[in-house]
Length: 179
Image (cartoon, rainbow, N blue to C red; front, side, top):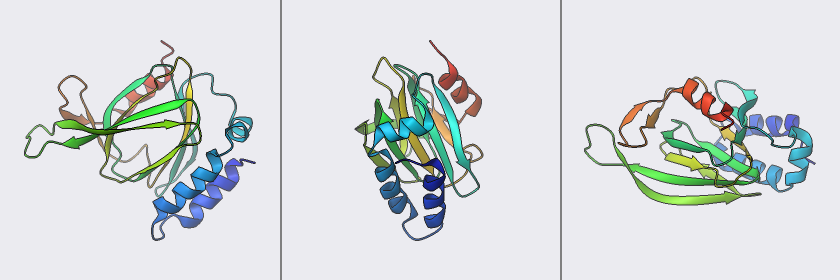
């Protein structure tokens, strides 16, 4: 049975230790292995949003609710991340920086499609974009090795793929948009 307080306690117990992101991936994989239990605890995903479940300088746990057909631009986290989907689908496109590009452009370098019960761990240097390919809200727990809201990072303009500072307010509006 999924329990938010237990998830937080389990993550806090390994944060700062060796291979914390690997241990947290195992913790999260167990948590999302029973999607109905997560939905019973967090509620059915009916609208988009970034819902903090826990936040500290060392650890952020979010309930990420992707709007139907939502697309978010390439971005990085500047900290490791672990994602576990418990409802719907999250398609991740991985990007790599173009060597020597003065404007910090990126190019597509791979993809990973996540469905219910799937998890993925990303290193602190990963650049990715995300698509919810479904006509319904997708729900996932995202866990970060730092303060997700306070860590400076980058995003890439979708048309030119030029790097610029991450705009948290814009991202929060995207999640709230009911288009």
